[in-house]
Image 1 (cartoon, rainbow, N blue to C red):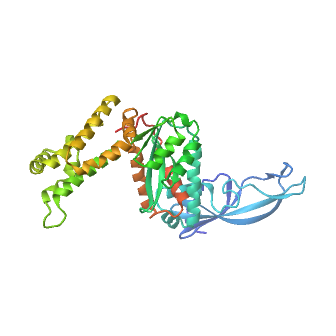
Image 2 (image 1 turned 60 degrees about the vertical axis):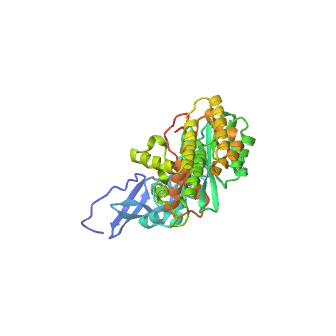
Image 3 (image 1 turned 180 degrees about the vertical axis):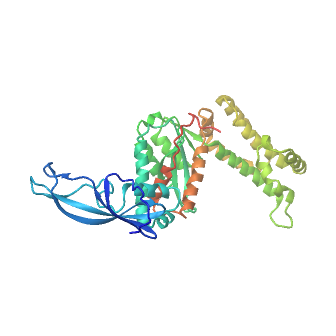
Length: 404
């Protein structure tokens, strides 16, 4: 043992240190429980008769940036009443565990913010242990949170798990701003199974989603009293896509014939009119003078954005009818393609004016999910991926309508 070392508190009052040694890269400590006896699990009588001791190597949290290896002298006691030989309880480490409870909690918390491999290399443990610790930590968090009541407003959105080949669906509580569950795939069956399992499902008033038919069918079957609300940003994205197709038609595809003024101002065309800078307005006025059809397409886009600021459903229905007539009378083929979408999802689009909810939070959560996936370079175990997503729930309570 070094004669120039200083004592450092182990922080485990249940244990008594028998011997300690500080080496170059780690500590070696021999410990034993402070108790004098134990209670027989067969007859419930206390005994102090020690039968034998068996050393067990354990690992604990670092001290002074050095790994701590504990050798626990595990005792077995003999009951003087019934003669049973039993092992003393192990509350610091747990039965058949080779690391302390606090060390496993630390591993789980660390691995939530970095990769499993990096945590394992830093703490000099196996990756399998770190994965189990992460699952235990998330399980503790979900258990501490407890069961929550079914929210009034739910959001559904799919996200990519493996490129464009595999998708899962995030089901979110739009009232509290948290992920309720992640189900496999983007089809109707798994979503139906979860919606059927909701307690007090009649409390749900509205479900925000993009224009994905399996989601609509699942909600209509399981939550017949709830209104499907098409996410307004999803519809505006379709409108912007039509405007961009008009621009591309005039711009041209090959390098020699490409009109660079249209290409350079493509983002200004999609930006809201109220957010345009003076120089952008001047550039767009020049484009509109040269390309009158582009001006009509831009005015249609802004008309739909202004339509979403309507506060009365009856007026919104009338204005939507007028917008559809303008598209029919106009000669822009790119916008005429939207008429089928507006007709097929008309009721769900108008439901926004009853319940102005959006999938803005869900889309933001999808960005967080992508960050989790990139941090680990993807997940082969979908269950681990799901647990990590559920662990990212925010604790703050949001307003009743999650609007933007």
